[in-house]
Length: 353
Image (cartoon, rainbow, N blue to C red; front, side, top):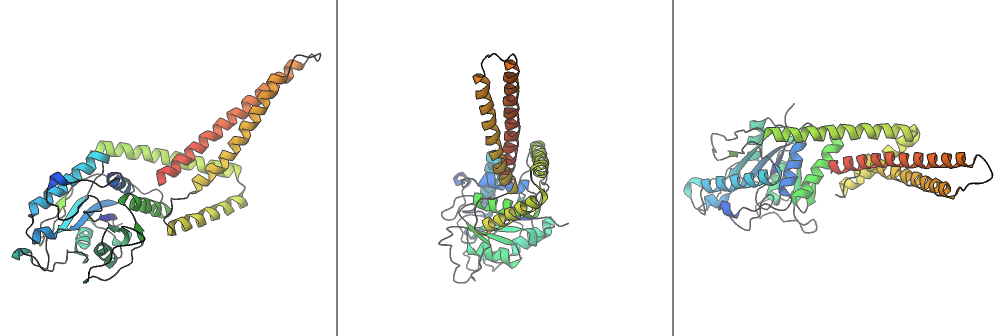
């Protein structure tokens, strides 16, 4: 099966940039960008950066400066959250270039999808399973041209308008940050393939003969990555088994079917309105939390009775007291067990966001 990827614009999607950036000392990651990229890659998506760099064509800096900025961005991503970038592609060409050799209306320049097609060939990608995330209309147009799902970063109430020579393309989602985009991708992935395998971190090349300017990212520490993935997989499997056992034990088949249907409807509603994810795990956690409160109340009641049972003329008064104490312990023990189930279900829900 062909692979899948998240294509990311660079400037004002991953790093801050108020103009043309050719100085690696000025690279600043946007808040949450590193963690967002790490979470997307744990789902099995390759992370591929695709950016227009017309500053080269305008003579503001050279391709070596673009490479230096990209490498500094990759270093900071890895340092902050262990986030791995599989490759970065850029287009230094522009139809109105000042530098003659870059005065080309190149297929790699977004809104044209040339960089996405090149990456698809290099990494054997199924573009219909890929995402394109960026802060400009040209990013959305490039992704739509090859049937990627698209996310526009900006103000949902005032999305950026296309340039005069660009066509308006409606994105699938509009969010305020890369972190919000990652939540959308994680949520959509969970609805399709809850147990996607993570990719190993490997160093790859991605240049084409006509544009030798794309750069591959340095490899992650594979031992650390595999360790984290193993822990995540074990926790996910344990939580899923616990959820199924609790569901089968306390919910009748007809009621369970109704609850599953309700949960799916709520999931769909949240997806369309870009609200925080809703899951069956969270619903079960809420229901079981109610049982915990009931058991806690019973335990406290029996504990009160235990202290109120005083010696009397009945020679078996002590037996009633012991019986009451045992019931109090039983209720509290069951409450603790169900509370542990609530915690496991809640952690599972948080892990899927």
